[in-house]
Image 1 (tube, one colour):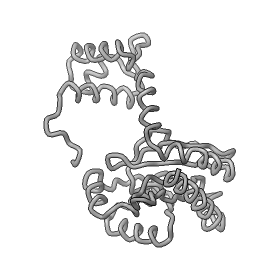
Image 2 (image 1 turned 180 degrees about the horizontal axis):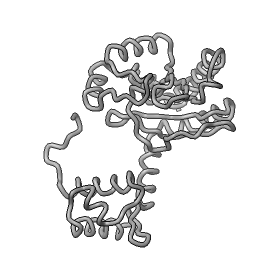
Image 3 (image 1 turned 180 degrees about the vertical axis):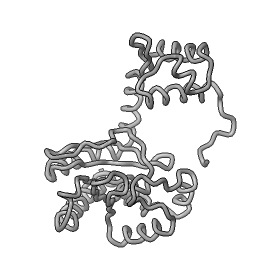
Length: 255
C-alpha cells in the first residue's frame, strides 16, 4: 500500500486498533476488546486507561466508548481544508432548494471523506455521516473526483482499495470504470445509479482549482430513485450543481 509506514511504531498501531475497534463495536469492555484484537486484557486496560486520561475514551460502567476528544481534532482537520469554508453555504442552498441530501466530499489517502452534509425537507437517511470514509468507485462523488485525477494516481487508488461490490449495480471491473470516467469528463457530472445503496440515486460534479487544474473535491445531491428521475435528474439537478460548483470555484480561486 502506498501509505504503509516503513518503520511502524507498534504502540501507535495498537492505539489505533483499539480506537477503531471501539468505534466499530459501538463500545466494548476490556475482555471483548482483548478477544477481538488478540491482545492480553492487561495490555488493553493500560491503553484504555491512558486514552481515558487524555479524554479520548470515556467509560460507562464496564464499557468504554470513543470520547469527544477526537471531535475537537476532527473539527480542526475539517476547518483546515479551504474548500469546506467555501462550499458550506452552497451545499446548504442545494439541500434547501432540492429538498434532498446534499454532500461535500474530498479525497484523502485514496478514499472519499464526507466533509459536510446538509439535509433538505425530504432528505433520506442513509449509512453515512460527516467524517465517514468511503471507496471512490461506487459513488457519484467519488467518480467525479476520479474522473479528474491523473491516471497514475487512479491506478494507485484502485491497487490499494480495489473495487469492492456493494450492490448488483456496483462497477467492479477497471475497464468499465475507466469507460465511465471518460463519459463523466465529457459530460461534466457523474451519476451513482444504486451502486452503493439500493434505491438511491445521486448526481455529483467536481470542484476544480483554476490555478492548478487540480480536483479539490466534489458536491452532490442524493435522493430515492422514485424522486430522482426524468428531467429532474437529467437536467435540473445537474445544472444546479454546475452553477453551485462555478460559484465555489470562483470563490476558492480568487478570494
